[in-house]
Image (cartoon, rainbow, N blue to C red; front, top):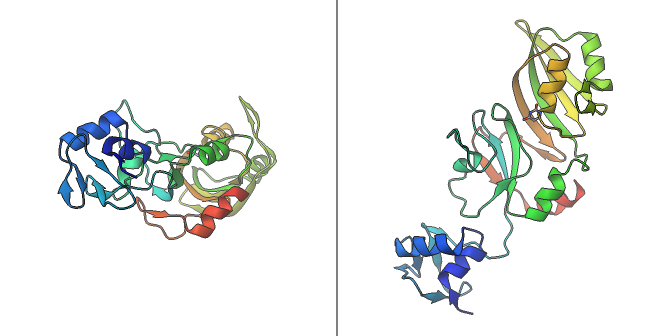
Length: 236
Ligand code: URA
């Protein structure tokens, strides 16, 4: 069925109708390799529609991406301080995705992005105790007592943290590296837990969220989840 181009673009989640009209007027939209004009209609099932050179995703198509967030990028969709935002890294993705939950600007590692609002809300909700593994580097040599405290629970201003696991501890030049497995996701939790025990975090990287692992994905790179991973998201 034919529909107005701006409506098709907006329902594909690329932007508002107004924005779509601006793109059309600016000659950034084509139908079957011909620049489209305002007011035109097209059939998304028959016509090849490109927006800024990229194919229009199907209206109901959900996109799930796993990004290796570099340090220095914010996970909000705009930043008043003008810092780079994670979606700047999604060069070939036409869909309008947003991050599931947050990572601090200085934190690296696994970040899930999607345009599936229902799933994003469910996963980011504190009630969902999805297990997450972080690689942590702290200043100082982590004492046995501090390790026990991290595992038993640390008293923070918003209450005692849930039991956690500390694994793969190693020390280098006055610092300690370890993996911390958490089952809750409070704001800046890892940094606050370590700081409360006297160990400032100097590097933090998320390695795993539930069954999803960063693996060998390069810094700043992203990949689409596989069909199997998407169907397993419900398990989280
Ligand atoms: N814990 C933190 O302190 N920061 C993050 O970005 C994620 C978990």
